[in-house]
Amino acid sequence: MTTSPAAPLPEDADLVGQVLGGDKAAYETLIRRHNQRLFRAARAIVRDDDEAEDVVQQVWVSAYQGLAGFRGESAVATWLTRIVVNEALARRRRQKKGEHLALIDDEAQAVSDRRTPEEEAADGELGRLLEAHIDRLPDIYREVLVMRDVEEMTTAETAACLGVSEEAVRVRLHRARRDLQSSLSEAVGTSLPRAFRFAGARCDRIAAHVMAAIDRA
Image 1 (tube, one colour):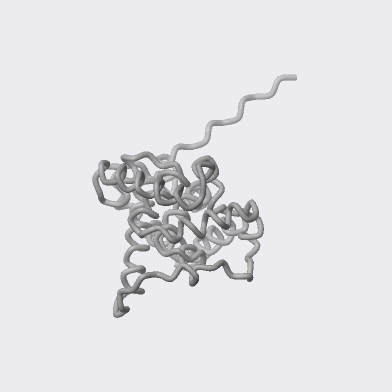
Image 2: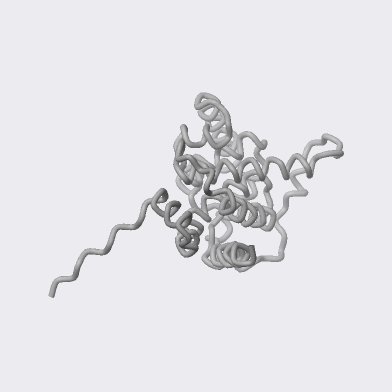
């Protein structure tokens, strides 16, 4: 007995059209499709899981409210990532406002003994070690490294999201890899996608929060 082929997944642009036509379920599909990328982009900037989650939730709600303004000049994923980057950068600037400039003490970056379910689901010590060392990179290097090597975005897409040139992305990525490899090993490059795992519970939580906020609005 033959089975019919599975229906192709709708394109992002089609989902946007469905949402604008009143289909809220289509927006949840978008959320679940791009949650991981947006979380990783925010996490690379704010360096805190809870803060990154809050950024992503806020952006999903505001993006829904402003979806009619999406003109299709870039991919939906790029548009969303750029909004997340801008919001995360704004939060980081607010956090740093009024603080004295100082070098970050590596000891202050020690991993807490308190573990969340998402952290426990990561691949053990290697994943946590990678995350800790990535967090210690300068901001401009960490952001590019996560987008290119962890989330595997293209150079052009990363440049568009960060508002810099493609050459700047290439230079920053080279320096980030060099600095990271000097403190870890050559094996780091092949293990990077294991960092900042996006467990199902977090995705479910963000989707539920955003959809509830949309329903209330």
